[in-house]
Length: 361
Image 1 (spheres, helix red, strand yellow):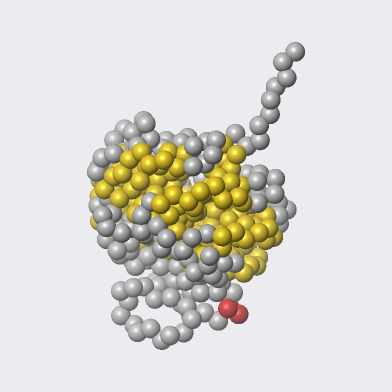
Image 2 (image 1 turned 30 degrees about the vertical axis):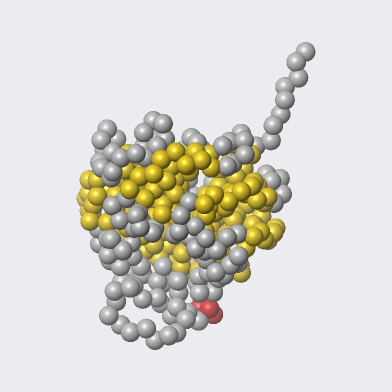
């Protein structure tokens, strides 16, 4: 009788450190959440946004210093180490990237260039060609994501207080404007990052300048958004004023301002988290099982100026980075109420911002 061998899943955490120009690689213990540093890959100054392919074979990383480019990095499933396989020029300085569900398209958003772009990914996982489509947006395109089906794509424009709506042609990979072309947030809200609910019924947008999470219902038949509610992530006792868009005419009054950054939702859709950089805190929301409605619960102190958070695929751990911290924080997520319990802090290189996590069976 042959005995079957059991091997535990392997989880790896990747953190881009913009100042150091590295991607720091850690192994995560699937039981305790503890991190062990594997290595640090030197990739280039101002490495920031990253994305992992659906098949977990590649990590894509953007260099935001000239020449602007995206790296295709092969992931070793045994060790988590990275090997560069391709480098491709980008049409601008890209603040955000994401992939469509097939892994055949890379979407990119340029904050300073006021544009989004679509690049093809070959069956070998490599981004090799120039952008096949570049679209001018409103001011400060800050993020771009597709829905869970890949039919619809949304781009947040911070300076224009708008979320643009697109339909994706599955044959050509070309985006066309939906009708209506966009939904507006409140004036001065500054929509930044977007997350789609696991059931694809809701889209949540974090506003950088006011710290709200705007909950939109996603119409599955036409891909349009309808605002349901807008819930604050920053309590009044934080005493923060609304932030100001870069091109706003009003003068800075030097008062501490809301500066929200990242948003994440657990794989079961029960809990949602956001970060705020001025106070260096992570907010927790409960998500209604039937209607997706948000209830703000509390917030937790974290690394200084938290730029990025990511939840591991099991939904049990959250990792947070701070741009002005030399440590990462790992939290256990209470499966009953979403509460965060600090498990440990780990050294990281300078300018830590973007986090990606992958688990191999």
